[in-house]
Length: 200
Image (cartoon, rainbow, N blue to C red; front, side):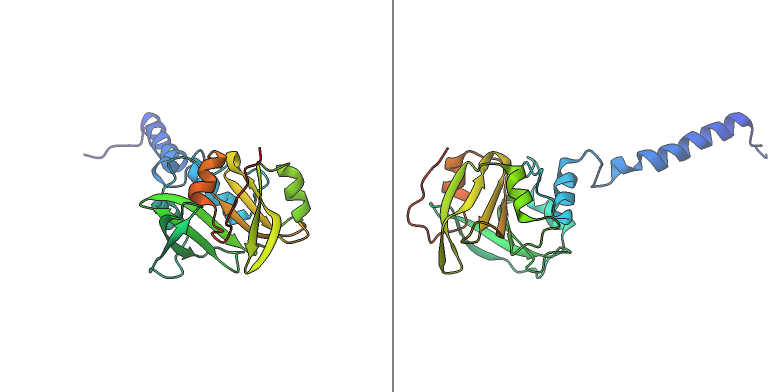
């Protein structure tokens, strides 16, 4: 028996096609309203002027599926003044010549380090947009100490490591929003600092 395409059947077919085209994004990993996808896109765009931290629920496996690895092997080390153990891998991203160093504990991302970033806007604009940091810490740029060069925004999940003149961004740290004490204890990547002052 041959079924003719009646107007009613054509209408149903059109609705099915529209759903497949417009609703299919709900089945993909990067949905328009997915906070993880928004964070990954900000990293890809090197856009940190409106950064408000890694969203809760964005595990390392989410990052790993979005950014390819330089190699599969991982390193181990410690973060924060308590030197809390963590693993790390190096990941690749367009526009980041020195790649992304991602620290994780089990499936939780502890820190994303971006060394010598090339930003698509002046460093001064980023500093003005972020405003005064919650913490100003001494840190080491390689082996050179930089006085109050680490500008940390714990509630925004962001830290900037500046040069000695505080005019250029030498590295960026991204993490989940936290309180200052947690950042100092578990996240701060400069373990050469013997004493860290807390500034509100």
